[in-house]
Structures are given as C-alpha cells and as structure tokens.
Image (cartoon, rainbow, N blue to C red; front, side, top):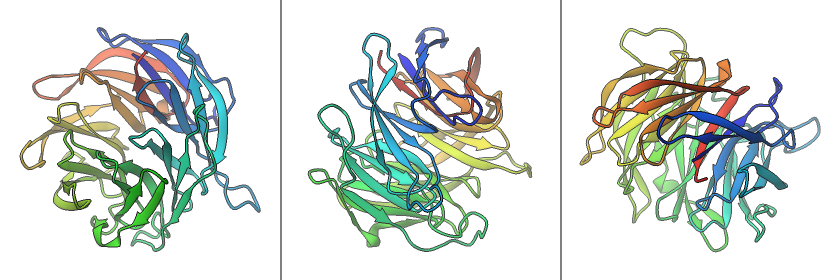
Length: 357
C-alpha cells in the first residue's frame, strides 16, 4: 500500500507526502513529495484505480478577490507513487476543506468552509479539472456566534448509489441534501430531506456504513456523533442516536474532527482534538446504534484526520499539532487500538489516505 499525507505548508512542508506502507508491520517508509508545487494541499482524495489524486488548496481569498480556494489535480507516477501536478481550478469559495469523487470518476465535489459553498468540477480525460459546472451557496447561521456566524460547508459526500450528495454545514447545524445528476454534474437542493443535529453541535464529517443503511456524522462543537438511518430510495436521513465522544468527567477544551466506519461495519472511530484521543464504538448491525468501547491516546496532539487500511487491520492518525503520523493496530474482536510503535514525521499533517501501490 501507499499512504498520502496532505498538509498545511506554513511551517516548511513541501505539500503532499508519500509513504510506502508495510501491510504486515505497519511501518511507514518515505517515498517522496510534491516539492512545493501547491500551497496547503490539506484534504486529499485518490481515485479507485490509484492513478489520480485531488487536493484542496485551503486558502482564504486575497484582498479584492471573490475566491482564493482551489482544487489541484495530480497524476500518480506508476513507478514511484509520487503525484505529478496536472492543473488547478477555483473551488468557487474560500478555505476549501474537503472533497470527494463521485462513483463514475467524472466529477470532484468540494466543500468551501469559509464561504459556505460547494462546487462540482468535471474531470477531463487526462485527469485534469475543468471549470465548475455547478456551485451551491448556503445561507443562515447557528447559535454559536464565534463559530456559526454564517454557513460553513465542512464536507461533501456522495451516497453509495451516487444519487444524492450530503454537505455537512457546521454553521447551520444541518446536513444539506442534494439530488446529484451524475451525467451533468448538477446539484438540486432537496430541502425536505435536509437533516438537523442539535443546536450548536456543528456537524463536520459524515461516513456511511458498508451497505449504506446507516451513516454517522461527527459534530465538532459539542463532541458528539449522530447516527442516522438512511433510506436510500428517498435520500432521507433519520436520526436514531447521538453519542458523546469524550470520557465522563472530562471538562477541557475539545473539537472533534474525523469519523470513520471500519471495513465490515463492526466499529466506528472519531477523533478528539483537545482530549487528543480516538473514541472507539462498537456497532449494533441491525440498528446502527453505537456502544462505547473506550478511548485511545493518539500519542500526539491535534488529531485532525485518520484513515483505516482496506483490510481493517491498521489505523493511521495525523497529529497536526505535533507533526506526526502514528500507526495503530485494530484488535479484530474488540476494535480497540493497539500502539505499534510505528510513526513518521510530517509537518502539520491534515489528511491521510491509503491507496494501492
């Protein structure tokens, strides 16, 4: 396997870093990096074939400009695994923070945190990006004046059948639901399907269970995970549970970041920045409800993102505040995280993604 790490480039990072990953031991071996061709390639997405990589350029707008954010396209060198820059397109918003590929491989969808917008960019034959074919803008605010003064689109995910797009908006406490036209790349708001979380919760990222019957949303501001039952035919999310991410009695500051479902669907993980841990849940397969298993220190500070390898054996966490990638082994029966002693140094890692070598 290969591991790609997206970073902030403020402290000397050159951009996107590539590691070889030993599937027996969990060891990480440096392969190369993108050598300064893009700024703040924070969140990444790799296509299913492992030949193309896309990265947001998480930038605010310069003075007098309507949009500073962008999405960069790369081809992956088959010999080395190192991404080669192809082109860049505007994300049609500020501070883009998340992107995803649709199931056809024809479009990149990007969420712009700063401007509360989401855009759809077409992918060309060479893997490069064309001008956006659709842009949607959210409106409104939430009860937290410091973080919810306006809309903040924080992630965009496609349904397993590619028919609907879900944009978690931290500023609105809402999961916006759009019908997705996979031929034209168009988004059509389905306001009657939009799902709410608790006021002030701040939904951030979403992950579907295998099979698509349930989805989990991690709420950054109130340290919870909301479980939804998903009606695929209608595109409707129905909340069935909200579970806390922190240990009882913890009173320090915290901001949640990432949520993922392990392959097989038996375990769910979420990251706590502040408590600097990953929360571990087991999953009731019939209802999707979560049961707390425990918490594991990330052996660093500011766990922004993490990734689980396709076999469900290892979990790799990016500690942004302490410039490290740390590897854990997943206990196959309990889901608990076991430190392996394996780690790698990366300046301000924001996102990690596994890909086939």
